[in-house]
Length: 127
Picture 1 (cartoon, rainbow, N blue to C red):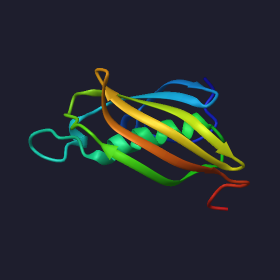
Picture 2 (picture 1 turned 90 degrees about the vertical axis):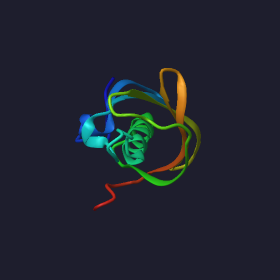
Picture 3 (picture 1 turned 90 degrees about the horizontal axis):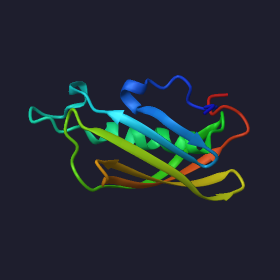
Picture 4 (picture 1 turned 135 degrees about the vertical axis):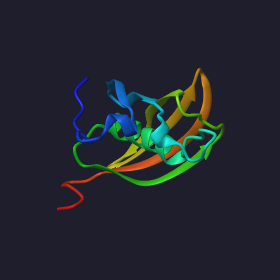
């Protein structure tokens, strides 16, 4: 499981990779109180999106992959303390453009779905 991209990600915020294979990945995120949006323990959607985005990036697994667009749906709430799994799969590749689907589940229930449009650049986006 060699990860060639996003190597400085804080796994406590974006999740821990469980598997990375050609065109597929799984990322597990244990939600914490720092992710709460309110006093009832609703996890802010940005953390769920972050885990999904990270899963998409490592499914492509190229040093210069970036996110260009996403089409996402938040289907169910996530509470602090729950563990979610982001499962990514590259669905289509056309040149430097990759379409990656991501489902985020908790206890086998889908809480988030997304299609991420990723681009593999010739050099780092900041160069």
